Image (cartoon, rainbow over all chains, first blue to last red):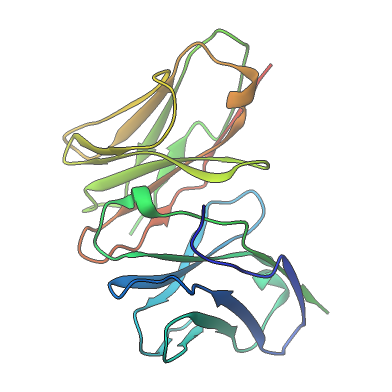
Length: 112
Length: 112
């Protein structure tokens, strides 16, 4: 019963920007949006998180709509190593980790 | 800084046996969470420990148990193994202040 909806799969050309959408229409005011990715057979890797302002780090950018009901993770220059399942999660920050609910995620395939 | 370390990485057991998995969190992280990942159910929360106390428990039977030591290292135990316990077991540590989870590579358990 994840609180987010993501497309099942997406393709992206190597070197191009990958834009991964996430719908979280029932997000509460104190819930953050977190993004993780999981490369095959490895543990999930934290990418970025935000509350309402757009965020950027060395890995990606996170764009959150003004009503906070959806967001987009942007990988500016996708490489083959970015092929992974990407999970969008909403949760209250600094809370207990039992609410870290991963949905099915989006399987991103970066093609040469 | 060393990441989250899980041992063993792979193991094979037979039905009825029991197994103990170990997790060493990132230095300074006092919260350790455990997750089970299967193709059918995705990532499911097992339990979370903070300062040697179990803070939360997921919806798993009592055969699944865990503990945390004074150095924050954690173990989880599964008794009377069933075929359905075959999964990737992931441990994650976090700083309570940030809410980001850092996952280990996981322990892949196969029950025959």
